Image 1 (cartoon, rainbow, N blue to C red):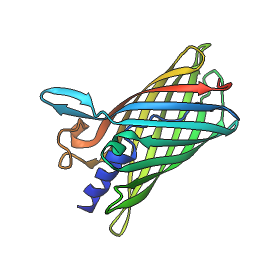
Image 2: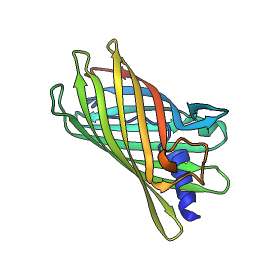
Image 3: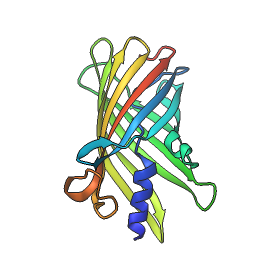
Length: 217
């Protein structure tokens, strides 16, 4: 039962409505972001993503290091707090060509209902991103690893993701991202309405928008 509690916590709050920071901002530049989506569910014969809303932003403290903060607006609407501060490090940056930009990110999910529980759950992400065309649209892929402390130890939850960003004009990027989290766990008992291959893990679809400030390439 503790395993199902851990999965429920991470799937519901840990990585449901956040697209990834894979575009280096550059020192002194910033981004404001919003995303909508979450686990795919089936209700009344129709399949659609859970409408989870997040707002966030990032700032480039160095050309290869960005700080970011995200807030779950849907959780706030129900009286809960979910904030995710983090840092993204880009050890390899490429403007074009077959060699991708590499990003490694770490964050903490702070969760509380202000009454009975409060948690801080760590998450790591690694991604590669390819810039396409003169407008530097992006294609990217990577892996998330989140942790929940339940009972006597830590429970790992991991999964791959793929996505893209279409640059519209100089400052706006439209994003689409798909995730498959916890493919090694049977989540059919936990949430039978979720769309999960073979009843394992869950599939999430996110739509987002990024608005860039400064000289972001």
